[in-house]
Amino acid sequence: MAARDILNLAGPPRDVPLLVRIRVLLGGFLNQFGWIFLGFGLVFVWMFTANADLTSWYHFRGQINTAEGTVIYSKKTRFSIDSSKHGEDTPVYAIHYAFTGTDGAEYKGVSFNTGKQFDEGQTVTVEHLQDNPQVSRIKGMRRKPIGFFGLSIVTFPLIGIFFITIGIRKGVKANRLLALGEQTTGRLKSKEKTNTKVNNKPVYKLTFEFNTPEGMTYEAIAKTHDTAKLEDQTEEPLLYDSTHPSYAVMLANLPGNPRIMENGTIRADTAVNTLKVLVIPFATIIGHGIYIYLKFLN
Image (cartoon, rainbow, N blue to C red; front, side, top):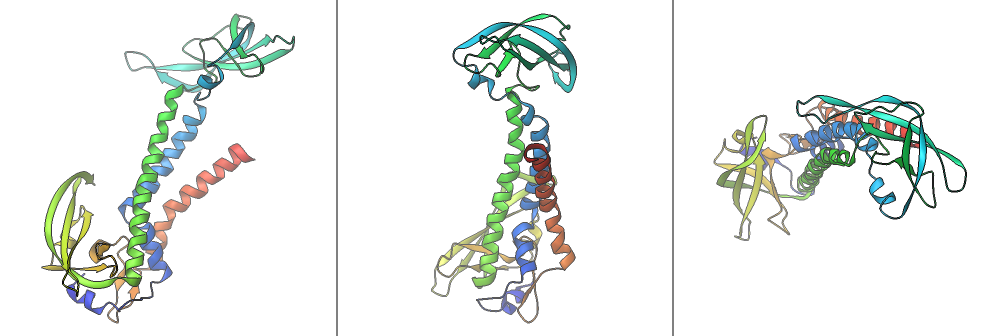
């Protein structure tokens, strides 16, 4: 973006088309990476976390009853756990059992065990809640295929949400300044290498210094792995909030790369490219929404 672009930008308030707002809000690396990470992370959440025994610590923390149970049958599940020194996966077995509660009624349940299959008719010790025998397990086993470590999988979608949050906040800021920000240029003050990489390229923190008409000096910060777009001129164009000048954004670092036309209006690249930024978020929301409905609500 040449220096003349900042001079051609119309004064505030500006009309920012919907396609531009969408592209700025959801475009850029942070947003797209975040949605990808969230989408794939949720797949593993449904596979592992949803099948993790996360409640036994609560149900069986107090007074429990025990009863003699009988194995109805056992079978190998689709789950396996790397529990050997040689990195080999050990299958998880589902052990179906029956027992008689203190009320004289028969109850059935299923527990999960790694690496050991039980025979039909085998006797087992069953633990159950005193006031609710339907909540039970074979002593020493789990109530679901995966142990408590399955909760750690939640880390992946949380990382995605973290990036999406940062990206959306950046997009909201950019959209606001596109509509209401004052124009000026900034001089590169410092360039620092961060610990983050994008496509094996280090991300840099670039700090620009600019002056307001009142003679005050402020800073605008941009983080990017593509520093060339912010170092091709002596002064780079930016927008800032006249009431809070430290609230500023470099035009060359806007997510979605909106175009500034010769008449000062703001336009998206193309409608097709704008809609592309919606593909991953929509696929994530709709795909997992359908799964939640079919699995838990239907």
